[in-house]
Length: 190
Image 1 (cartoon, rainbow, N blue to C red):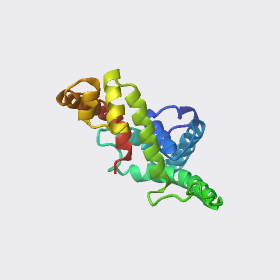
Image 2 (image 1 turned 180 degrees about the horizontal axis):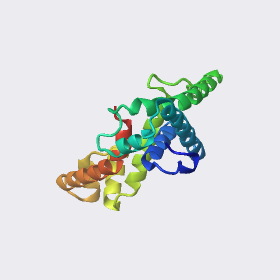
Image 3 (image 1 turned 120 degrees about the vertical axis):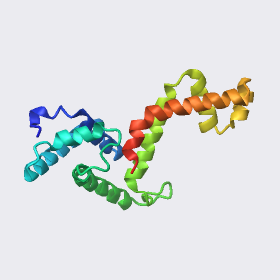
């Protein structure tokens, strides 16, 4: 079980908690605080259950390809994070719902909830970031086809390439983005 001096260990666990905080709108500083709070909560659970290896087991599960979702450790970590994140999120939603509806924007949260909205926003940000790091030719294709709404044939005509070549470049760009976003997407799959 980590002591307060040893909370810098367990990088997979720290990253997992950070992603949970980010997907719920936490700032970097708030994510640091959330990591420490979750670690304290898990320390209490580990002591209560007399499971000194809890942190190591969670860290190892997070390193496995199939991940944490189907493990016995997942509900422990999920509940520790939820117990800290949900009260803040609920308060934030209540505060937004108390704002007068000016007709400019709807302050209600759709059925998917705040976490889903934030997860989609984070995915969009990550996708744009990763797209920005593609080679210029692939980056332009993604922007014109996916964000500007051109068909591959229209884009091909625009740049003077046949559709087959544009399709090959599209497949290449999609593969690169899927690979770069694989660990991020795995976090949100159920």
